[in-house]
Amino acid sequence: MEWSGKTVLVTGGGTGIGRATSLALADRGAAVIVNYSRSKRDAEETAELIRQNGVQALALQADVSRDAEVKLMVDQAVERFGTLHGLVNNASITRHIPLDDLDSATEEIWDELFDVNVKGMFFCARAAAPYINRNAGAIVNVGSIAGTTGSGSSLPYAVSKAAVHGLTKSLARALAPHIRVNCVVPGAVATRWWAGREEQMEKLAPHLLLQSISTPENIAQMICSVLAQEALTGQIITVDSGQTL
Image 1 (cartoon, rainbow, N blue to C red):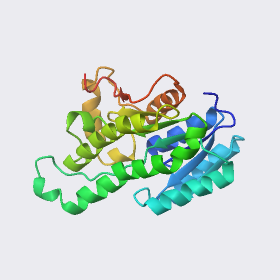
Image 2: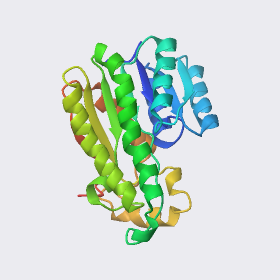
Image 3: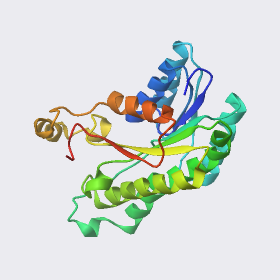
Image 4: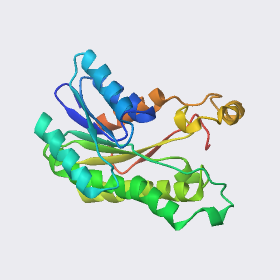
C-alpha cells in the first residue's frame, strides 16, 4: 500500500507504541488521526510533530470503550479527511495485580479492562469498517504476549489480550475480502507502562534471545509492514526479541 494520500486512525496514538506508530505512518506519507482518551497534551504534541514534517494530522478525543464517542470520532475524521484507509487499534489499559491474587481481580477491573481492550477495539473496527472497506484497507490490533502465555501485569489483562487475538481472527472472517485484519503481539516494550519497573526490565533483557527489550519504534515498524501487506489476514504476529520462544 502506498501511504501518500492515505489516512489512518491510531487509537491511543499520542503515547508509547501509538505515538511511534503515528510518526512512522506519517514518515510514509499517511495522514494520521491521533486518538486519545486522557493524554490530550501528548496527542496534540504528536499531531504537531507530524504537521511540522509537512503531513496532515489531527488529534481527536474519544474513550474507545464508549461506542457513541467512537462513532463521533470516526465521523469527525471522515469529515476532515474524506475517508479512512486503515485503523491501528492500539488503545489499551492494564492494572498491575499479582496473578495469584484472585481476590484483587474485582468485577470492576474485569469490566474496565474488557471495555477498553476488547469492546473498544470492536467498536473502532465497526465504526471504521464501512470506509476502510471502500478502500480495500486494513486493521491492525495490538495484542500482547500476555494473551499467549497467560502471564503479564494481571490476570484480567492477559485474558483481555487473549480475547483481542480471538477478535482479530473473527473480524478477519467478518470483514473479508475487502478488509485485512491482523494482530501484532509485542513482548516487553520500553514504554511508560514499565515506569518504576526499570530494574525488572534490566533483569529480563539478558534472558531474551536478542538480549534487548523492544522499543516502541520496533513495534511501529511491524505495524506499518502488516498494514501494507496485501496477502495477510487473520494472523497473530509476535514481536518479542525471542521472549516466548
